[in-house]
Amino acid sequence: MPPGRFGTSDKPRPLALYIFSNQKQFQEKILRETSSGAVCINDTVLQFTHPDLPFGGVNHSGIGKAHGKYGFMAFSNEKPILKQKSGFAISYVLHPPYSVLKKKILDWMIQWF
Image 1 (cartoon, rainbow, N blue to C red):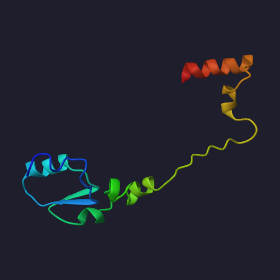
Image 2 (image 1 turned 30 degrees about the vertical axis):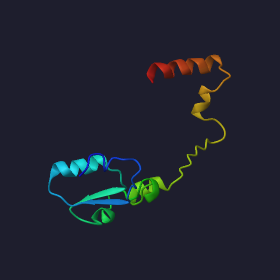
Image 3 (image 1 turned 90 degrees about the vertical axis):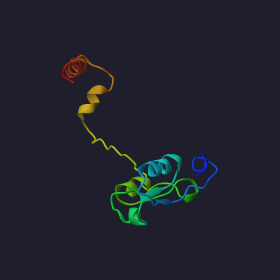
Image 4 (image 1 turned 90 degrees about the horizontal axis):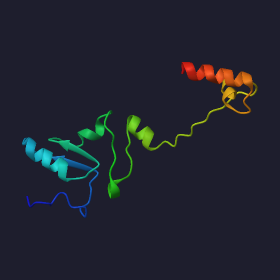
């Protein structure tokens, strides 16, 4: 194969790339010099059915990954929400105004944490 054929950035990036070879050096060369969503060596479509492998593409073949944890994370828009109870909460010790008592508590907390 001509040098640089696989590594050029103007080449499409497939959703999946299938390599059929028992030569480890050739496999590593293809993996190193290409970009694709997934790679399957000496088989086809098997990577899509594996529950622990992410599925998805790069650039025009897709954005993000699907399946299991990867799909959940890719298609989730986490919204962290912290709801403090009304009334007294221990975190209020960290908020001003700082009384003598609050300063003593903070000094104690700094000492132990």
